[in-house]
Image 1: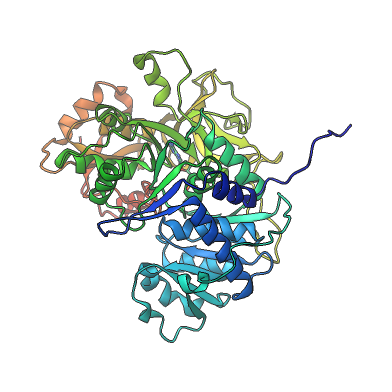
Image 2: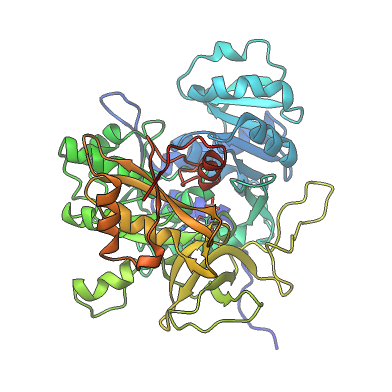
Amino acid sequence: MLSTMQDVPLTVTRILVHGMTIHGKSQVTTWTGEPEPQRRSFAEVGRRAVQLANALRDELGVTGDQRVATLMWNNSEHVETYLAVPSMGAVLHTLNLRLAPEQLIWVVNHAEDKIVVVNGSLLPLLAPLLPHLPTIEHVVVAGPGDRSVLDGAAPRVHEYEELLAGRPTTYDWPELDERQAAAMCYTSGTTGEPKGVVYSHRSIYLHSMQVNMAESMGLTDKDTTLVVVPQFHVNAWGLPHSTFMTGVNMLMPDRFLQPAPLAEMIERERPTHAAAVPTIWQGLLAEVTARPRDLSSMARVTIGGAACPPSLMEAYDKLGVRLCHAWGMTETSPLGTMANPPAGLTDEEEWPYRITQGRFPAGVEARLVGPAGDHLPWDGESAGELEVRGPWIAGAYYGGSDGESLRPEDKFSEDGWLKTGDVGVISDEGFLTLTDRAKDVIKSGGEWISSVALENAIMAHPDVAEAAVVAVPDDRWGERPLATVVLKEGATADYAALKAFLARTVAKWQLPERWTVIPAVPKTSVGKFDKKVIRKQYADGELDVTQL
Ligand code: AMP
């Protein structure tokens, strides 16, 4: 028997129309580096999105599921493309501006992008790539930046503001199938070619609702969120869509992502929430330690994309800022878990929950798979690879316009679950603790050592700014941990002292014998530790390693 309910498709169009009418007074504030930031209401951002849709159709010929790429910082214009492009039935492709040029060329060609909307400040990055991007017919430039680098470029060049000016402020939105492609994002691909994840209208809609639930970020129109996580990194964790659903004000840092302007933004605009990877919070902590600023408006911060060291959480607790740990992937839209502790606990009792990756929401089913393919119990001890499934989780990768979807065996199980490549344990209450990436685990004498646990223990030392631990070959044990450490400015701790500090909390057989101080931990394009680079530096003899 079928239900008697209306079958209304869940689309980005509905999010746009809802936000600009019901929450028309909420604001998108974009940092400009000028004394006053740019402020636009949701009504205005929505109206501009409608004008953009008209321009894309009438002037640039977007009539179907053409891909419209963005090479942009987090700002109002980027939010406008987020809303306009999917609503008209086209596909938004956010480009990671930190990718190597060859990777950018690869993803634009693979997605066959027709148009690229680019911030003026990023033209020096785009211009040299254009001769290698045959599918790009139009370049639309938004915001300040020298346009002359585009002189002689083959595609037609347009000014964003000129394109919008005088366009109609209504659009006859098409009735879309909710399963249709709305946006795409390529994984940062540390190994092999990047893989395209294509989000549907339905997945974005449902994911946005989950982001808005109290057990997740739970923001309302009384909140302002500082969206540091780039819009090219898994749709800024869904915030540009989820905020339009509930009227949460957005504070957008544009290109001002350094610790000093971030601290100034927080002090002046007083956001109540923020979202970013641990690297950003480490940098901001060093800044406010050197030059104290008031961050206390940010009652809640969502931190994820890489493991949050408990020491970082403690440091922010002291500043009145509560970091809430979340786990996710490009393939999971990204919200997979969030570490809001269960009700009724004291601060002390909450702590063991807060330092996990968090609990699965109803839309994410999880299972742990052991080395022999067996399903492991949720007992907080049995470690295996995490597999997930749900309505906002990828079931395949984009295979190109004339290819089939890709379902590589190492990424998808036979019964359709996503193999995350993350290794961890799940407690009987459904809280996930990750111990490693599958490819980063250290196998010493047949036992696993968690690189993440060692990193957290080293980073708890007051002299340490950052630490990354990788597996290196060892004649006796197969593999052993190598500790690479970044000391805080002026710090003097030596290796013996660090090892003695670790020995207080870490089992003796897990203590690293190999230590090296490095100026900075190499990072990927989205700010995660790039352990592949460290392993290579070690293999090539480039690190000055001390053996204890
Ligand atoms: P990406 O698709 O680039 O966002 O990368 C996803 C991967 O980042 C996950 O598979 C994890 O390995 C890692 N990751 C994301 N969030 C966390 C977290 N809270 N703790 C540990 N690792 C994380």
